[in-house]
Image 1 (cartoon, rainbow, N blue to C red):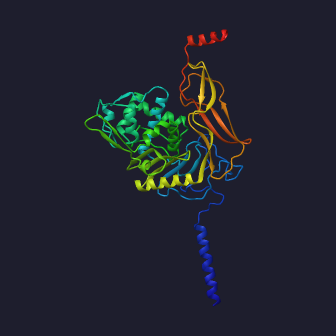
Image 2 (image 1 turned 90 degrees about the horizontal axis):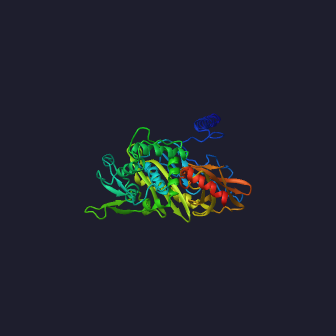
Image 3 (image 1 turned 135 degrees about the horizontal axis):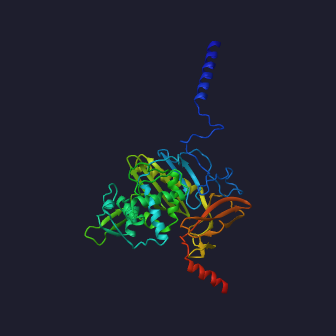
Length: 425
């Protein structure tokens, strides 16, 4: 009897030792990359937010608690980001470099919207289709060589039907050539501080050195959403092209969430056999806009279900504390030797900080700091200052401030008149 008890005890001890040896040792080490994380990284500054941010009166940002829940178990990578603040709520393998398929077109649409904002393009402008643009395979709106469409219709074709032909036609319109437009895409990625991205074309068809990450797609999406007009295209479920022709072309949005998920109004789907099913989705509820990205999903049903779950979790847990609203005055910027010497600056979009629901906001204030003298020429999107948000004396968030338009250097005659005019004013 005693021998039997001893043998049982020894067997149990051996089993415990085996389990201990097999278990991953997370104590004092970083969690493996494949595990989902509820992050505190501020993508605007690249700085990590204080880990102590929680649901207390002293920590209004209320950073997500590391519950360990995997909100996107089937995705190869995923991320949820608050669109106003850029705060990451959830991420999983978010910096893995992966083929993006048609969510590439988020950057294409961003450059189109910036060209419109900068006055280089109008929605009513006609875009001619080259033979090369018309030859694109995959998703398309069946443009014919020489066919003309307005920028407005081309945007519908890109945003709703994921037209590869329309994407190349717009690339040639803005860049002159597809290659030059791709260079502009990569330059914009660098300007946004995207480290995981390289573009080889404007439509996402498989190509060497064409990749990005869920994190970088979320940042691009957030930047695109600063152009509020874009959701007129990405949030529409159906429309027509060539309405007055004998063969109108029916457009149905490839992103079914805009019809079936409350508050969804974008942004872009993608699929190739290599990339699998991808989606950058955005939804707005109670004044809070979120961006959710998944890459490498096995099918559309799983993709849409996991994105919906990511959005549901974030809307349930968090809210925005407003700092500035779109259109609020931010002062006047002096541009030395610019065609415009004084430039009134208004908020181009909403600025807010993310808070855990129920957290108390006390002593929140902000200030605007311009980066020294701004000298012409300056381009749309160039950083010229920052908006700093404080709680008491503690900095809790910094937002970069960019040029809302490009300002060219003034000619000598304009500068002469400006200087002599000041002598007699």
